[in-house]
Amino acid sequence: MADEFEIDNQGDAGASQTFPMQCSALRKNGAVVIKGRPCKIVDMSTSKTGKHGHAKVHLVGIDIFTGKKLEELCPSTHNMEVPVVKVKQYNFSHLEDGFIVLHDMNTSEERSDIKVPEGEIGNKIEAADENGTPLIITIQSAMGEEAAIKADEPAQKD
Image (cartoon, rainbow, N blue to C red; front, side, top):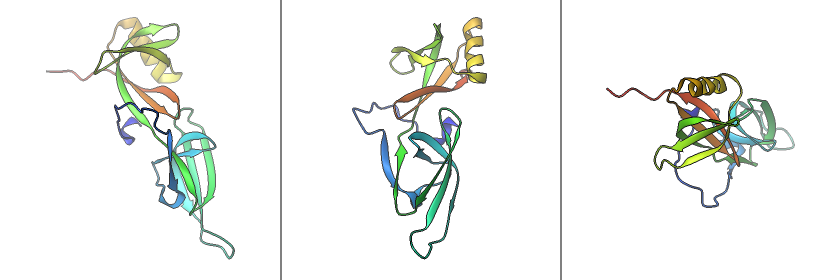
């Protein structure tokens, strides 16, 4: 899922967390804010213009953090908010009180503010912590939220 969004390693310097886009310009596999949540568009359909109004766009999205399905119906000429989604990779260090201790791959700066996720990714991280296995953790951030979305062993250098 991480490879669907542009990888941006710059700071935001107070930049907006969303930007407006006309509903008709949104595309499947893109991102959109539905009911205040950042979502990946998994389905969209357009109804024809009626006697009294605009064509409507029906959007179906999956919350990029919770995995919940959300839907929205909006006129095609209206603007929707699109979240700025950033993905960054870190070197895994260890676990501490339910949080992942990570090191920035460029600056070696340490951070420990990401909770261990539930499920397969969390299990993989916990196993790596017990075994001392090196991991590359992918952190996705959007609208002030951050989560670990991927945990991979580093590529072997020959």
